[in-house]
Length: 108
Length: 111
Image (cartoon, rainbow over all chains, first blue to last red; front, side, top):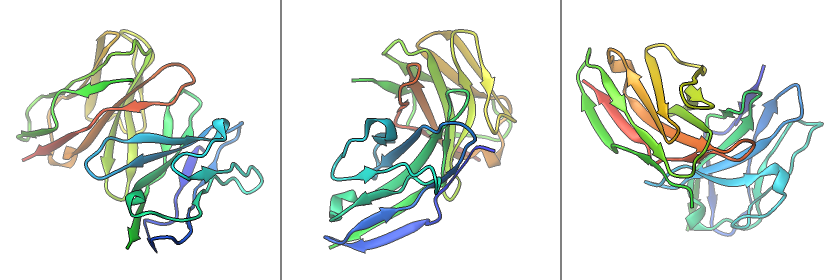
């Protein structure tokens, strides 16, 4: 079965602290993974795509096929990073399978 | 920049009404999608479409139908609205093998 698990509903950190948002997936083929972010009152937007291997807004994510994980990391959190983060898996039909999301709250 | 436009940000309807949610994209994308977003449940796929007049069921199609008469427009239809369809509805579009782009969403309340 194709599935994405984000174990934390809410993650709260202080400004300047490291952040790691966890994502595990279940997929029999070669996975395509994404992180989407939704800031307050804004549309859902793509943050990262694993094949691009780039850093966006200081965030990185590495695909670990052995652990079936795609955790999102940032070394120093900023208040403007507070948002809802969704991990998503590209399905076999071109659709996206989303996790339930993690709300990141960065406190001053 | 890709623009996905949903016709309404907020909509209030009554139980039993037929409800139409409209979505238009301006980038000639082949693929279009409808999701609902609920707290604690994330996004769940309702229907998607690869081309004009084509549609595929997603994970939760019951109580919904869709229409894609033109490439740029993908409509979600609630045949007989019920209170459990109160939700945020998100439309997305994409080109093949490219990331999906989302609209602002329609917050639908069924009274």
